[in-house]
Image 1: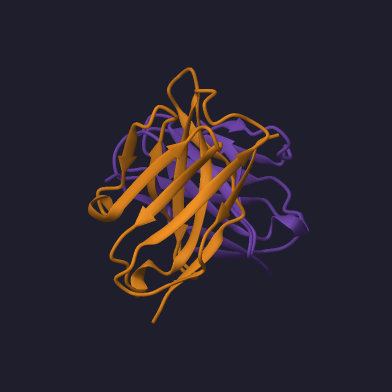
Image 2 (image 1 turned 120 degrees about the horizontal axis):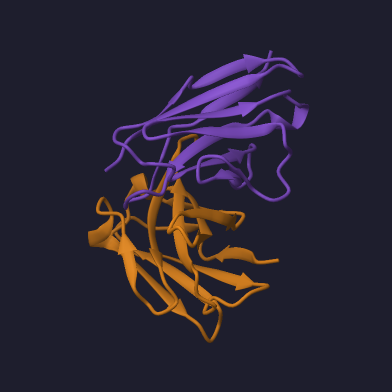
Length: 123
Length: 107
C-alpha cells in the first residue's frame, strides 16, 4: 500500500523559499501510470492544486503560481519536492502531496494523499 | 480555468438521512469528476472517481452521478463518521480545480 509523507520546515520567513519533500513508500515513484502532485489548503479554506511531475521529470504547474514554483523528482530516493519562492503570508497553508493516478481512459484522481504539513510564513 | 461550484456550502442533517450534494462545472467536463471527503485535521480521502466509480473500501452508501456540467454526490443513509467536508474536483483540464466544499454538520 503506497503511503506519502511530507517533510520540511514549518516556518519560513517572508521573501524566502519554501521547500518541502514528499517521500513515497510502498511503491516506486518510477513505476509509471502516475503523476505526483502538490496541493495546498489555506487555513479554513478550500483546496488549490499547485502542480505535478511525472517520474521522467516533466512538469505542469498551476499558472497562478507558475512563476514561483519548481517541482522536482529524485527517483533514487523515491521522493519528489516542491520549492515555492518569494513567499508571503498568503502562502501560509497546509501543503499536501498526493499521487495522481491515471486511468486507461486518461482520467485521473488524487489517491492517496500525505497527511499534510502546515507551513507558516512569518518573520 | 474550469470553475467548480458546489451547493449547498453547508447543510445540517441527522443520522440516517439521505444527503445530496451537487457540483456544477463552468464548462462540460464529461465524466472527469472526482469526490473527496475531508474530516477535520485530516487529509482528503478519495470517495468516487470518474463521476460514478466507488473507490475500493468506500461504503456503498456513497454514490456519484452526472456528466457534462452537473454532478451529484449522494449519501443514502448518513452515518456519524460521514460528518465532514466534501469536495468535487475536475480532471478534464489543467489546472486541476476543486469546488469550494460542502460541510455536512449534525442537526
